[in-house]
Amino acid sequence: MPPASPVLTVMIAAARKAARRLVRDFGEVENLQVSVKGPADFVSQADMRAEATLKAELAKARPGYTLVLEEHGVIEGSDRTHRFIVDPLDGTTNFLHGIPQFAISIALEREGDLVAGVVYNPVADELYTAEKGGGAYLNDRRLRVSARTTLDQALLATGIPARGWPGHAAFLAELAGAMAATAGVRRFGAASLDLCAVAAGRIDGYWERNLKPWDIAAGALIVREAGGQVTTIEGGPLDLTAGSLLASNGTVHKLVAALLHPTTSGHTAR
Image (spheres, rainbow, N blue to C red):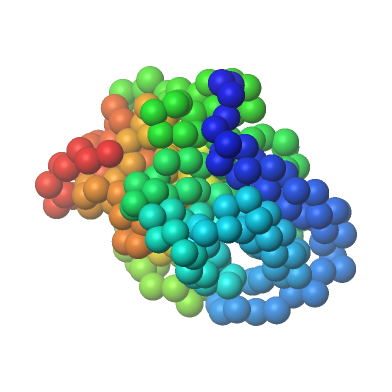
């Protein structure tokens, strides 16, 4: 991994600091006090503590930057050209059930453009990083997306709409089409890590709806910097607020998009 920029170094340090307490909490997950935010969307004390650490560390290092936080919303800074987009615990349900598939996700946006991203799975000690134009890395290893070109060989990942969320019937139709045409479909439960799996070539494509900016901002940049493609499911340019996302190795992108959205116009925006 090449030397990180000062701001990426700040992001990595913040993620690692928040992760230390998160891992301790994960070891005592049965004792966590949990409150309900909404249907199948839980927030724990661990989540709140991790966000507080990230907020403090990022604000201390870059005091003027705006913060977009999953739990505490937007904290406007004096520098309106930069904002951190932060998910302190992506994969909360996995965490609460003792499944070691969760991550801290931090992205930096400059004038609306994603320029740096960090996704850290502390249990596996897998640190994914990317800076615009600088490539994507897993720890010290350069990442490249897979080279598969056909659907019958492609392995996909997805996210299932939670209880009380819209879109169950549409998702089941998408899933049926994907299962019939590909080598398989997986559901891991953490959007940021699904995107990183695309970047690492572990899976060839990933789609999901009902996503928030903090779910996907860092991972989307990591996919791009690994040579992949990220759009909405309909084929339009990446929009962090659209809620719809399709990421792939690029070579199967149109094929997957056609499976999921047969009327897509075939846009190839990255």
